[in-house]
Image (tube, rainbow, N blue to C red):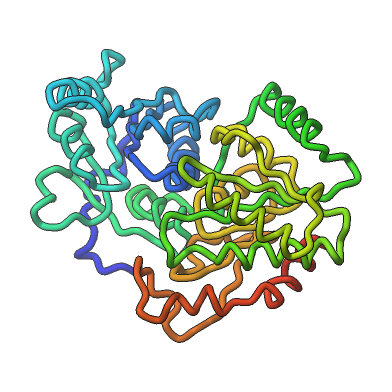
Length: 359
């Protein structure tokens, strides 16, 4: 149990907010991992309107979410004067009525501007550093180990809400599902094929399994399961890396017809819709794994520097690591040449991949 000194939740037991603002600016995967907390708040306060403050690039994650009344999408390109107007507009409720409760899940400077310009009765977060305490009226500890539960811990301790192991939530429309089916048909994915989405990218080298390993693993898996089809996912600036993965996979013996590399990057919601049609998602520890969980697609994640706190603790979601004594280090650099990833051979991952596909 957390120490009582890490709490400041007096006066919250009788709170019945009508308007709530949740603040999580970035990153995309973290905003998706916020959705279980939104669900907990909606379950605890069913009559409340729940708004979310996030960055513009993350807003698509929350589209069509029936538990979110409004999304404040922050444009980071705004100048100082326009930014202050935006923070003031958000903090005062944007003409839709003041917020009774603001929950800050991130404690970033831009969020603190909103808090400072708001007259919300309750401003709740996890325990802040002493110099940030004036921005908050209440704070409560986080929980764990799962990352989404860690966020929700603030609500669990503040309002006595139970954690029910809710997965992240992303709500696709029928039109988005139809579009995804059309994309797959255009790429030659037939009903008799077994689709695996693959995220071989990451901006941090300590979370990036080598491109050659991905290429070799796909070739090995297809030699056992000719029905497999692999779809490479990528984001802005990652085109060169996925092209390399494709080249190495073909050099390892994978038939070109078994590997799809879209000509254009998929949007976040297109990616999620395509993942909803997949049998499995394979990749590094990055946001596409959380999208797969949100659309109920099993996941297998290759872990380097990160812990298994990012793995959803439910059936069908697994991670694999070499298990070195230094893992997890959560570092962005490595003096051991990232042995945790380079020494994790494709042959060691293959049995796990095939076993999950059999399930």
